[in-house]
Image 1 (tube, rainbow, N blue to C red):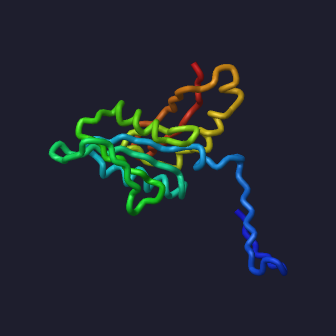
Image 2 (cartoon, rainbow, N blue to C red):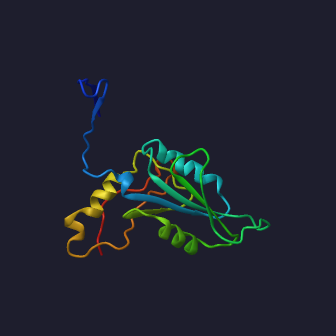
Image 3 (tube, rainbow, N blue to C red):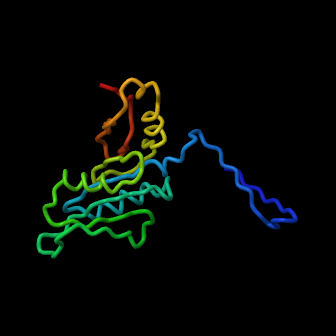
Length: 170
């Protein structure tokens, strides 16, 4: 990223910012991260904060099931008080994983939704740009457009990330 200041008679002190990137699209405008959580809602902040290290405005929508004794009859969405672009949806106890992820997918307003487990953390191996590039690649999607795609995840907590290896279209 390059920044320089310029001044002219019509706009004194205006700053000119030039950004160069490998992708023409900003992944933060095209991907929403979604995750459902039942009993470990404390993990959702960790998930979001690890993404914030690399993506300052990536949309993240998560569900958090209310405890068994709480009065929580229907889903209620609220913006997180401390983490920007994080929406937490409180859902009734025993809402269910499939139902929770379906609700989140419907709430996502971007072209792609990245569906994660609640214990996922973004790492240096995670590459949303790589995922977006592959999803849009004519090589992979021209003959049969994608509907649902899975990416391999290494089950090592130290190297946990969303994308590794090659995408196989089957």
